[in-house]
Length: 503
Ligand SMILES: O=P(O)(O)OC[C@H]1O[C@H](OP(=O)(O)O)[C@H](O)[C@@H]1O
Ligand SMILES: Nc1ccnc(=O)[nH]1
Image (cartoon, rainbow, N blue to C red; front, side):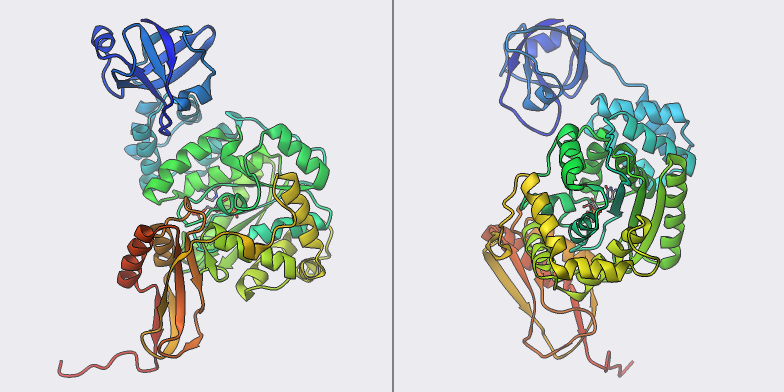
């Protein structure tokens, strides 16, 4: 059918096109049907919404669809029912536990990028990967397809280093320190991050508190060629565009299928042209990888995938048994990370992990002798060179290099939990900490999250503060308090663990 474009101020995160009920009946179109909109040589796909917002002979175009193509008001387009994409059949193959061929994986990824697959099919695909997994052939094909359906960056300033955590541990603001330390040593590190997937704050969510994270590849090239580093959101770029789309489905389900995680991370590193990549695998109770054996197996997969991509990969298996540092949530983590960079001091877990990872990168990049990287990293941090480099990154990314961490706004609706008894902190439940921070509004509400006052092994007296919940609304605070009371994220125990009698 021919239709005139009517631009609607509708933004839903879905690629909706609005069609009048009578038109829809004539064209045999139904709600959520996929249609192809042909405008000259450009083809865009959208999901049908039946609506009286548009008249007969019109098609309403949402702001989401406008991101795909800049339609003009009143422009005449052709609207054709699209039918079920071939890639749905391949998704069902994976749902049945079958191995996918390279071309089938490429078709799925292209259809995701072209928005021919709707949320329901993308969620089905992600879920099938969670249940049935991928072998290394499939993972390599997925990684390259994800990278090659987007833009690739060509940075002249070499060697190009990179670091990426598989995530999963609350408070993991580590790489916000690692990047400036490594760049201050003269190495190039174009860091891309995703937003939160299973945590309460992804690195992109945290960096966005004090700098812009959405840039074009040309802007990133300019920044990195100039100062040797960036900290940007992979989802803003046309960099492995399927990645952020599948991450939205993962976030909704709070899952991160191993094969998709490998491809998600390495597709971004591949697209950035990173030559030396350090992967951080936080390991412990309540994170994505719970045992060292599982971490070693995953490490072998990252190293193998890197070989297939022509990238040198090393892996650091790190302690993930409790949150990193004392803060969880974008603004709270930003305060802690910037303070550590500014002063060279901070929570032992944060400083130790950051200098450890940075030290490995300094050795991988050839600027530190074997075994001396961590010492060099600590010197760069404590000397203030890392902070100077961070100020360059902040300024180039549109932030205020004279930022004062204590001036970063945080949620002013607070509630502090105290120790119910005296004893020792014997466990901190990572998943509960994340859930409480998310209930408080993180990561969408930047100021929401938790401040932790204790770590595992510390002695507490009855009434000592354990953690404070921060929220930006009373409703969110109440929600988080209810959850925290039920979850009891911090376990306090004496030497007498249980008294058993009369059994
Ligand atoms: O913890 P969850 O949300 O599952 O994983 C996502 C986080 O892990 C990675 O961290 P980094 O960018 O390497 O610091 C991603 O970029 C993202 O920030
Ligand atoms: N699945 C992912 C985990 C961590 N980082 C990513 O970019 N992707």
